[in-house]
Image 1 (cartoon, rainbow, N blue to C red):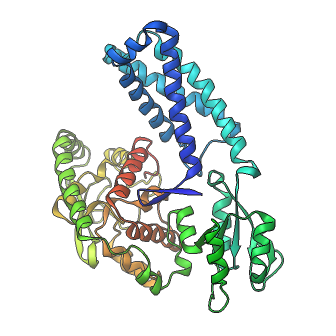
Image 2: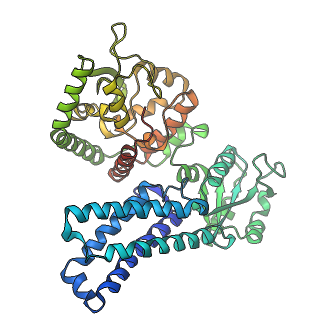
Length: 463
């Protein structure tokens, strides 16, 4: 179903899609080089750095597809929009190549290699995506999956799998000691636990997800072990849910699970590594952005005057309070620096400079000082206002677990969901934060930072 990379599950079919398109990008521009240079191709590729230039273009092409959501399991373009999206990718790549060629003429492999390779790339990408769609939708290539039990997980997993066709899963039904023939979500009961072996043979099951709530005396352990020896994938519902959604299932969370589950205990080496990387990164970014910071300070002074910075108490690691810094983006009202009410789309409190700062997220730049001071890391659960944090801690179980690590400038929840407006939104946000805390690693931090850069460049989710 999925390959686990960077301590985060990634669908194997999406990896196949990426590797296939790497091959197509390389083949397109190699073929274009052969068509232009023919017998001189080897010399051009070997002695004129042609292979390195093509490799750079391949990386640019992959970045274009990544930033246009070609590999997001919930946004992979379907056949109806495929041609348009491929043309957008190729058009963006051609603009980048034109810009590079104008600035660095020696970057080009001959005069027409990239120009010839782009239409070849367009044709091959459309053809490859159509082949992928045909394979992905074929029953023959679907991994047939069975639920053992009819617990709450089955409804949630069913909804998530339906929205992610790239996972390549087909949920056949469920087996349980007792239950209705057909559940409200459309899953059919195929029989009792005693019929498990027969049902797996008849339906060609390759994965069994255990969703039983009460397993004492009901879980057929010996049968499951025998099936595992035969190559079937046997997976606990909580782990399966995490692999599909990237979040921890709060509805069925227990203290014992937090105690015995893998994770939730980062090593000292990891914590020291994060601190060193965050401190060094914040210092370098402050130096590099110093001219920009001075321009923003001047813009705020000319627009609305002092104060330049917005200061607010937030909850940090182990519940310790700290002062968070931002550039002020709202007008002062009744002696307050900012209202506690969250910002809204088109909020009338924004100043002219503040609206631009919010949209570009540059109002967050002073938080580099928080990172230098050790109040925050680059990646971690995003800190809320003190009153809001403590109120949520009273209403949402396990909420205090967010405070077990340093808060972050960005985080797993920030790149996976939008702003929180309701209690249910904050519960979902916590499920992402707990997933991050459980699977925390330097490599996962790099993935989050890379995705954050994508969000910033596309100005998604800003208010």
